[in-house]
Amino acid sequence: MSSTIFQTASRFGAFPIALMAAAVLMAGPAAADPEFDFQVGVASEYVGKGLGKSNGEIAWSGQVGVSQGDFRATVFASTAELSSGADSEIITTLGWAPEAFGFEWDFSVMNRDLPGTAAGIDSNYWEYQADVGRSFGPVSARVRVNYTPDGFAGTEEAWWVEAQGAYKITGSTKASAAIATRRAHGGADYTAWNIGVKHKLTDAISADIRWYDTDEHDLGDSYDGRLVGALTFAF
Image (tube, rainbow, N blue to C red):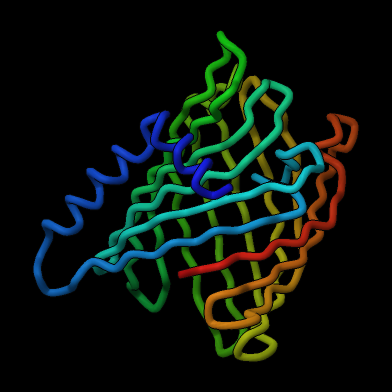
């Protein structure tokens, strides 16, 4: 299943972008060798920005990445089932994650593409994202701001602002909660939140169980509350 996802990603041009980014990373200073990572996952539903994106169906995902120092490039792809006809979502990311002033920063440029979307619907768009976080012993906090100048379909510019807190229960178990608000021109405005626990079963396998919900159930099934379980395999 994951090979099918990445074939789809390659067909829509995400891989060439990532490969060029990887070449840039590897051409950088020789002080640090590039590191590669691969992940595959399965979830009871694919969720993005608090909304269900696979119509209650199981979603398969995969990710490839390369990093060097504070820089990284990744391609993530997941199966989906949207009313627009899209059957997958592909996210290509270039990012820089330095540490400064006692905080962890993360600045990203992302391209989102939804293959299978009906003709005439704008299904490819860019996002610009900034995170800042800090840890205090077992407690960590993060604030995220995501901006889209021209979003999916008829959505024009949109903002997603999220605050997250987490508590490390043990070395392999972490509980976290987040709340976010979305404001968009030509799209839906809503508040979303989630709460759950992530546990590392082994060094390579992680399980996450999480409740997602929004304040706009009247906007459709994707805005309803849902319990989502996920497994991720890293290698």
